Amino acid sequence: MAKVPIESLSARIPASFRPIIVNPASDQASTCSFRTAQSIERRNSKFYKELGLFSLKKKIENTVKRAEMIAHAAMELEEERKIKQEVALRTCNLWDNDISTSIESLTDLADNIKLVNDLKEVLHKAEEAKLITQLAEMDIINHHLFKQAYTASLDVSKFLDHYEISKLLRGPYDKEGACMIIKAGMEGTASEMWTEKLLNMYTRWAKKHGCNVMCLEAFPSLISVTKSATIEFEKEYMYGYLSGEKGIHKMIHSSFDGFTIRETWSASIDVIPLYLGKMVDFHIDDTDLEILFPSHEATSRRKNAVGIRHIPSNTVVECSGERSQFANKMKALNRLKAKLHVLQMEERPETGVTKNGTASEECEPEARRYMIRPKRSVHDVKTGVVLHDLNSVLSGNIEPFIRARVGLRRPK
Image 1 (cartoon, rainbow, N blue to C red):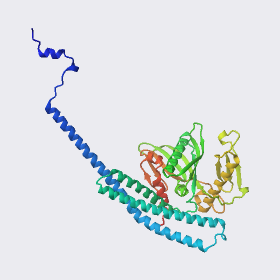
Image 2: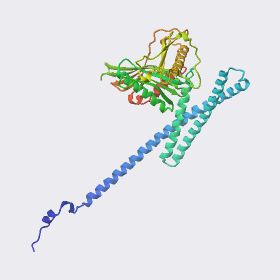
Image 3: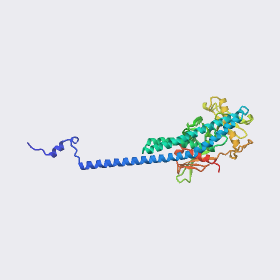
Image 4: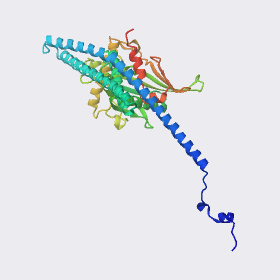
């Protein structure tokens, strides 16, 4: 019987059935390198986790220190104020006073009691965050406990921010809600699209602050983008926060070198107080008012719209969110009263409205510039603050601008 060479047999066997010859030395080397890579990855993961926990710990410590510095002093101050209010209410007869004055005194006391309780809760949360951090350190590393303490510190920081700003908002209307009117500029479709972006920006900002937002009126243009919109912010201090947003907001598209402005889209913003739980106490003579109704060609959405013009100051407001012309007229009249009241009390020369009711030509100041090129940045004209993240600002992160404007009220 003839012998068949091994080489010819291996050639006839299909590749899928051939045995795989493993080199023990190379297999050991690959296993060793795999284990080394795993060890490095585990070490890096541990390092980044410890770095993250260290960062969380520093933020928690800073917040706790801030709470111990501010909240204790604030609580003593507010407690003393509360005692004085209680003594004043005991010594006077509320029934002998004017009803509105009595209600205001009781409301102030209730607000102060709530503030004292909130400050106590803040101190409790700060102490809780501090204790959780210490427990986490005893347990060497516990990411869950650190996150729990960090969440508590965020609540503390948010309240302290609000408290500090509210102490600066001492204007007669700062504590009220806000009604914002956004109108597109004269650049056509581009400015209407820009108006819609601003509407979304303020809506997102309000939702981040837990504020109830109502879009009462939104008038679409021919291509279904927003030509003008009216939104209401139903929360205390919203007027104080947003009153600085008044003016012209411009989106600027420059050349790459930044020297040539190619396109500018604009929208005007007006903010008036939204009185929460009370009516506007401001008298207007009927002879000074002109009621404006929409034309016969108006769309079905605007057929019940009512506009009111204050003839001496040439101030015009409009309302169309209600189902009847009478309801729209009453709401427009309240908005007009609120706007005239603010202009009269502030007596600002640039608005052209003075305390004697006369008016000059109104010129809205520029409030903010949103740059697309050469850098995607936002420049606040009133405060000089510049943020280099346009997308973040348009997503509702406008807090730095608001803080800077409110900070201008700080006594020097």
